Image (cartoon, rainbow over all chains, first blue to last red; front, side):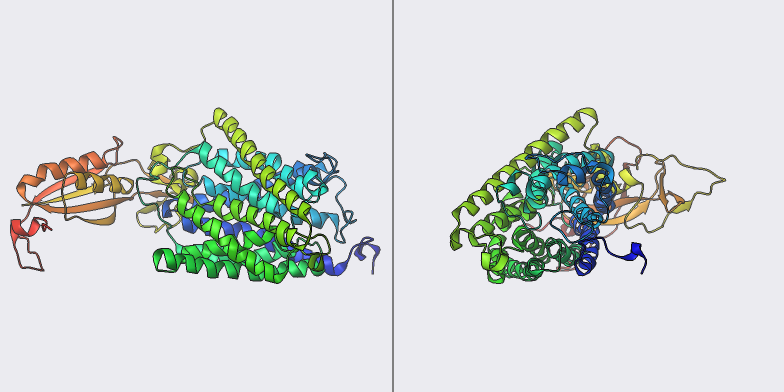
Length: 431
Length: 117
């Protein structure tokens, strides 16, 4: 064996093997979210909606490598990290303190979290936000909001230092995206037909398939957040298997009581809500409490979705209800039912530690507040420089054709091949 | 009796339906069609293949009405379908020889008059 083939000191090969797989699983969640979101919009906006998720991969991976990772994970400043790891400086094979996997792999794993979170926010502004300004927003948001919240919860920032427990991202990913989505919806404004016409999902099968792939990827998301093959990872993995099923059952019952029918879109939503709720709590609560958490988390999300659609707030794909609320519920739930006998870290109120609940509640106030305010200001600034929205005409024709010059369901009928010799016969214009 | 055929933009179809409803015109059918009416062509590109989309998506309304309803039907189609840009569509009004309501066997004007509830 050559010296290069040997693992760096302190690296565990089993842990590394699992984390390599987990990283790929989490990256898959972003295209899965694209499918989920694309099914929920009208057919004329299919590609644009999906492309916002693809755009999140493009932008957030680069910003993460440039400065995002460093601001989140370099040093233990209270509010934000340093620039010591900017452009991957000092990130190589030797493990980061407290882990047994190569630092590079830790970086990549955390990067996939940043990507999916940026993609999640797009759900608030689909069907009307211009693609260019969205990419600019995504780049800045990934650094100014995501990296900061990740530092608070994971990178040694003030929440983590004071004992807030967040296993896989209730603070930066779920509450971060959910409350930012609310701010984004308020700044960008409602779709022009919102509240006047029925704006229905165009493909419920995409939505279900997207939800299934998200759940699959979530095993890497939660199961990888122990950064090892240890007990915490196994607990989080199995809790990710249990909680969404309980959410599904409760969602079915709520659907039955309210509409006398169990809906497919509702089921897909329930899977996401269950996965979100167990995200912060996965490695801290017992499997029994995970089932209870999945079941109870359905209630606030379900009723927020029902109520939100009656308001003038066009937070289009209900990122706040599915992610913000369910994430907040999970964060607080840890403070009630965490058990040292399962997690070796801390107890919740029911097991004798009221202070744990206090710090969970502080996180549940601070993270949403920062995410909302920072996103609101960021979008106002971008909006002052360039219009955030497509014109009414473009919105009416559809974002696929006007933003990308493509049609998700092109038939080819009436399409004439333009040869390079002939040049463009027509002009690329408004349809 | 006339058959009023209106070809409009798909994104205006809901506005047309609303205008027809306001004009108390009931009994409408609509079809998604593809057509070309002189508007500038759209260019799309798929993996390096550039195509000119010569036919645009349109929606065709067909409305059979008695003579007193013709004008307000045409007005509703115009009001709901107009954007002012090339490609707003056309309205054709053609004479109708016979109309039969299948359920009752009523013919002509009785057949195009909505059922009073």
